Length: 335
Image (cartoon, rainbow, N blue to C red):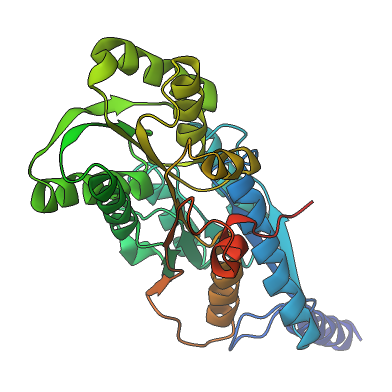
């Protein structure tokens, strides 16, 4: 009787183990029976750009659900876009929770590599968007604007409006931000190659990650160079908002040729008033949508492209109200 009871107990435990395994995942695809849990981690949560990324991520989840694959988006990011340690901790938390996939805009191209490698070692695929990583072997795909070309578009617009001559300032953003570093390099390379008579008054100063810090740095530069400034390039939304405020404060808005990156309602209105002469535009909704789509398709065992482009465009006062530009200037936002 004791041997029979022991055999019965062993068989019961085996059935329980097999049953638990089949109830939680499919060994071929890794697909959870109750759907996929995808962590989407932006650089920050306050700027309009990230709210549009969130809208795109939710749109992809809705489409997968309609097709029979439930996808839950877990959205979490640091409040400030210079909180590297905070973003590292967010990744670690999601890895510990055992999410199925991660979609992230890395705050720092090198500091986040160990965290993404930890996710990969845990069997969690990662897709990055907006900014790159120094080691792309740890990711499945990179969804982004061609940021180098975005910088080149800004350089050509400033060069054209200045007639190929003048003194220009480039205000950088934040050390380690791969996306803005690419914009900065594209701008400088294009000015040097295509507009050799344009002089860079300053190209090594950083704005910091808020509109206030950008305004303060821009005021320093305007006070330093005074009436010599003919053109100004700012490389992201908070950078652009801060520089515009500084130009307005100094009575130079509309007089200095000013091109920025990414829209907001205030910047769009300023462009109509010709205080802003150009905004390089991305498609943040597409970033969120394609990022989630790529990681879910990878979890389903499909092949995904290593690089997925979302495109870039330049809006000007002359084109601001065209249908194409309006779609990019006023992207959807998550509530």
